[in-house]
Image (cartoon, rainbow over all chains, first blue to last red; front, top):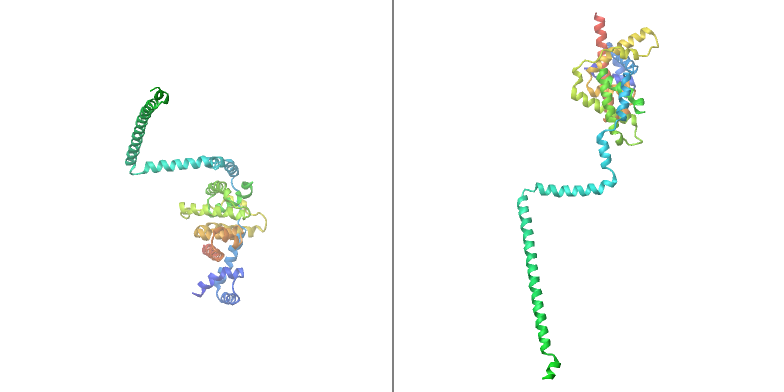
Length: 165
Length: 168
């Protein structure tokens, strides 16, 4: 049990990272425990072997492949770059609004009712216009007859003709 | 430029982590594809090497989770690593060191991925605890604990193999 606890402290002991009290406790244990002292020695060998671990050269073709990757411009980034151009922003904004309105219309569950209402309103509008047109015609006729009456009345009150009488 | 500066570093991290030379080449290529895609997100002034190593680490861990390398065997400590070892020094000592490295190379497969990465970055790649913490995205105390656990486990593996060799 003591050895388990001491073994856990061995890396920090080797690095000089223990508090003085703990350092002294490990040192005292190492003097009396051959197993822990041996593990400490193997820890030293491990550290030395890891520190001088060889760095391997990759295969000669790899560098060429990586350079080819560097030179390749992905299609996505090209398209994305085009879409990010400031000149296209108003067009994209208008397109977004149109898309939103169209999708709201197409996805509306009461679309057929809406269509019927639009047709009804349209026809009602046409009816009103026709009525207005007809009324305008009758007004023109009325004005014509008023003008005629007025003319006759004016002739009847002509002072020259009255003097003759 | 980036390829010349960092390809060997990334390749070695991938090789030490995966244990397969062929797999490490594919991983390096995938990491560089990600790197070139992520370059616009890099903030100038930040440590580029640490940023790239973080990207590489994330990819290695993702691939590890996807493919579970621990079920596969690592490459033998073959001519790739032996030819890269420093040729100077006492031949007997060099032989002993190579033998230790051969055992540790196989032993790395027994470490859980988080601990293996911490050991690779700190002990083999020579990063500081602070840099390793930045790359792995965990506190420095956690990195120290992972590295120490890894070192201890590797030391036990080395001890066990020596004991087995002595028994023969």
